[in-house]
Length: 58
Image 1 (cartoon, helix red, strand yellow):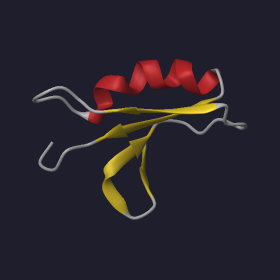
Image 2 (spheres, one colour; image 1 turned 120 degrees about the horizontal axis):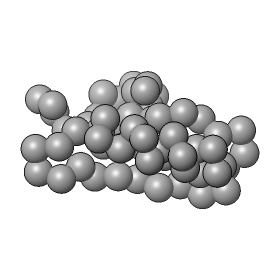
Image 3 (spheres, one colour; image 1 turned 60 degrees about the vertical axis):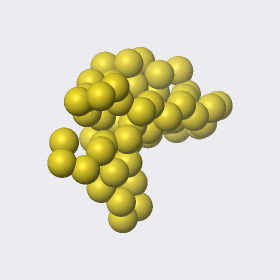
Image 4 (tube, one colour; image 1 turned 90 degrees about the horizontal axis):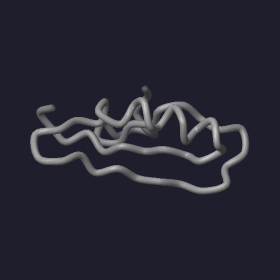
């Protein structure tokens, strides 16, 4: 997991070599970006960039 370019709110799980698309996840109430780690791993393998928002204080 890495923060995206200077912001702590955005997390990227993996980096596909060639991007065919992008999906952005907004966690449910009380959730965190790490909830989407497993699905992001699968999407990255399919050439899709996966970004999850990490709300402050989580």
